[in-house]
Image (cartoon, rainbow, N blue to C red):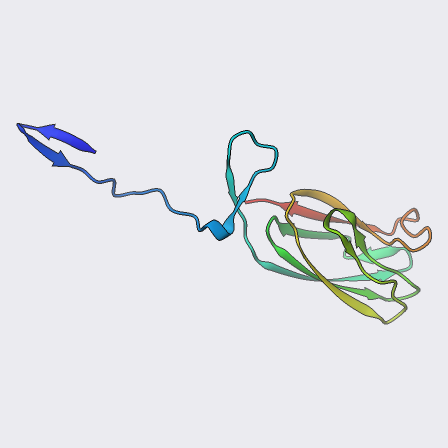
Length: 135
């Protein structure tokens, strides 16, 4: 900013510049007419989900948009799998005592159902929620 003072010119500098966000942490907001940026956490969220007689434990997983979810699914009885359609996640059908690890990035915010796709397990209540928030 230039300011004229008593016949001279004084140059003032903004001492509180706007912080710069590294481009690797920026994500455009989908569906926005105005180009906006949202800072994501980029953390790794590790969780183990156990599947047993028509239920999951835990029934809720939380993460922030941009996180990598490292999910270990363990079948504790019977044959089960774990599916999250919106993130393209589907484990193999696992027998009792077997486990499988999947890793994915949660790039959308919202509440998403995970479920067992074996026979009618989903209809019998074998579901859970993945809640993805933002900063």
